[in-house]
Image (cartoon, rainbow, N blue to C red; front, top):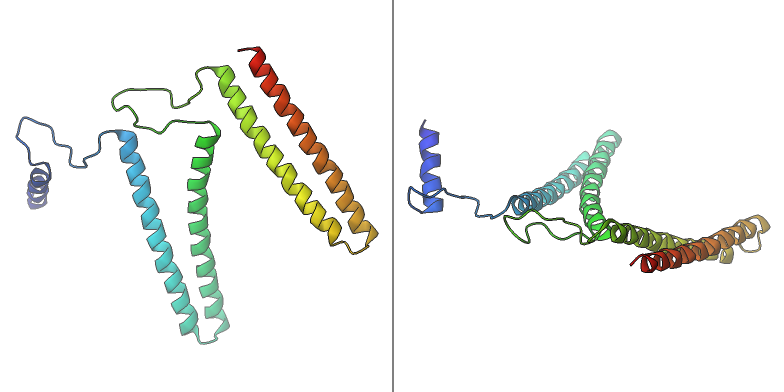
Length: 195
């Protein structure tokens, strides 16, 4: 009961308004904005926990004094803490990449209104956006494979088997780039035809 009274007193001090108004102690106007603030806070907590775990793992390595079992446990702890941090970063990156892929609007732009988060006005422009983005990714992958196979060809040092594999990889990478460019042209021409 005492905790409830302390909580009520704290809420009254935070809100500082009269009895006839409903208090919003978090001072956030919309639910999506509130969720995004919670996610940002969770990301900060994960970052702090990662730093704590890295320091803890380093301390365990120092205190192990060469004991193989303790060093292995400390390395494992360090590996898992960094892996968790990288996974959390990838989660943020994937969310932003998917929102950029589908060209979405940020939530909470017009509080109190429900609106389509996609910037595409109809299904045809959404399909065009998705296909164009996908073909852009395919084109980047083709260029990446051209670079990798070119490096493999240069470093083959006259080895016929390695240079043959690199030439075949270059051939397929260039063909993939040409096909992705032609597909992009077809998608753009079809979209202009139906406008």
